[in-house]
Length: 271
Ligand code: GLN
Image: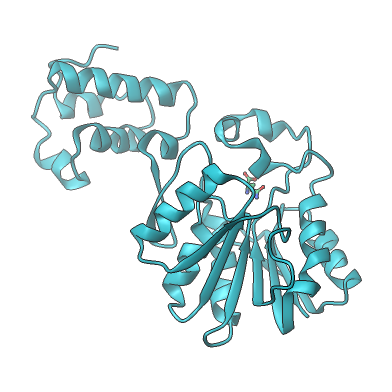
């Protein structure tokens, strides 16, 4: 793809990928805002810009998610840094932040298990500045991204490396939230689209899809204060099974909530 000497308008007139994606990558390559892309549309690309943009277009054509190419994704109104060490934050996960934000008691403590990019922890700290947030992940590489996102948004979060509750013996919280890997081993989506580029251990438990949700539910009573909520995101067809896990562990007010697509996407209960 040779884009040298072409104007922004010419490239956008015949983009090699979806127009919106082409605009995002143009902004990123030329360090221009959306508005500048329009006001400077007659500007032509020099060789360096043309080569850079062609390389970005090619990565997208090869299937890489836009968020990994630009290194950022917006979540809950916050721009978050992402790379291939972490899952790309999904809009449906904003539901979990909202549920948690509404239910956390004043000055309450909350534990985010498997924080990844830190999306949930940072968004929660942002919407509830009184919250005392602890976020853990088993991946040191993910924690590096999460710490960076907390600094970006001035969120005072305590980060720890931990395999679920393993590094938290005896510690109790007013709330536990998690968006754990819940895709069933061998699900065809794992080998399609954006998911091919994401960390597989953040997507699937390599088992029935419920093993991480089960481990979190099983350990929660030992790490929750009385009345504390456990809130978990899960797959589109897992709500009845997750409610069953919570009921089996003696949780009260067990219920599920729908995302904007109308799918039961999160379930929870109170100790
Ligand atoms: N929601 C993601 C997807 O289906 C999965 C995220 C997860 O496993 N926690 O693409």
